[in-house]
Image (cartoon, rainbow, N blue to C red; front, side, top):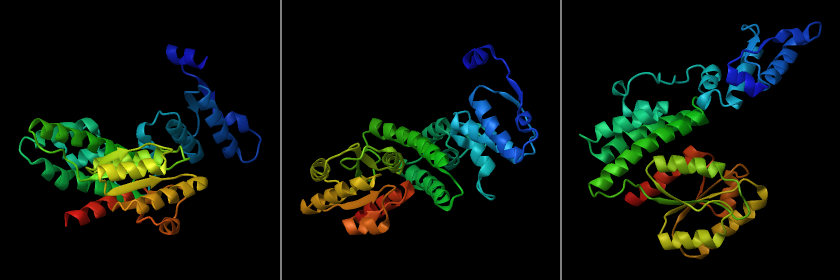
Amino acid sequence: MRLVREELGLQTVLGVSNISFGLPNRELLNAAFLSAALANGLNFPILNPNVSAMTDAVAAFRVLHGLDKGAADYIARFAPKGAPATPPKAAPAESRTLPEAVKAGLKEDAREITARLLETQDPFSIIDGMLIPALDEVGDGFEKGTLFLPQLLNAAAASQEAFEVIRRKMAASGGAPASRGRIILATVKGDVHDIGKNIVKVLLENYGFQVLDLGRDVPPETIVQTAVREKVRLVGLSALMTTTLKSMAETIRQLRASGHDCKIMVGGAVLTEQFAAEMGADYYAKDAKRSADIAKEVFGEEEK
């Protein structure tokens, strides 16, 4: 019935507060009923907009059901006071700077602006002077709690579009790819969780690093062989379960035993800085932003 109503464009009207008449703590019942009704096709609730529990429930429903793209409305509603506002997406690309497009997560604008900039500017001046500072600003906001994961990922996606334009331009002119260094990422043996690793990959790539993603449930031997063969200077290991920390420790042990001179960063929900140190890792990446900071530190040291 819900699909039929949607196809016909019909409105389903409901006076939400009627369910709680004569009962205590009506606000709780009304909010729970509203959420259930929305999930079952209600699209025209009659409610008091001055009751935050009701409007909050609508905001949460729109996020969970994919109606609020990138949770933009939800973030605008609940972000702390003083958090930076997202620039309006309706403004033409010509009126934006590249950092503004990246911070707003506008992929098409980032492509167009980058293409224009490449007509007069060096690719690395765009990367170092615009893309990296924009990502740094978003990352700092994420760390401080004034920006949130959807905004971080949207900014990374927009900068990825800009990097792709730069890569194509350099390839067409015979130049070297715009890479700041190569990094291995892998979820260790026995662990099949890779959402966190994939987020780290996106962010690292959009800082200009080349990521060799070995996937999930990766044996230590595979990681060691790849690191040695490809002469990779930084290896990132991920684990989400306590039962796979032994695999992470064994991978680190084998990397050290191989004699390959690389730095190792580790991350995952079950890890702490103390665990990382006990396993012999060089760095603990508590989140994706920290992994990018570690990569910049490692490859910055090499450049010196």
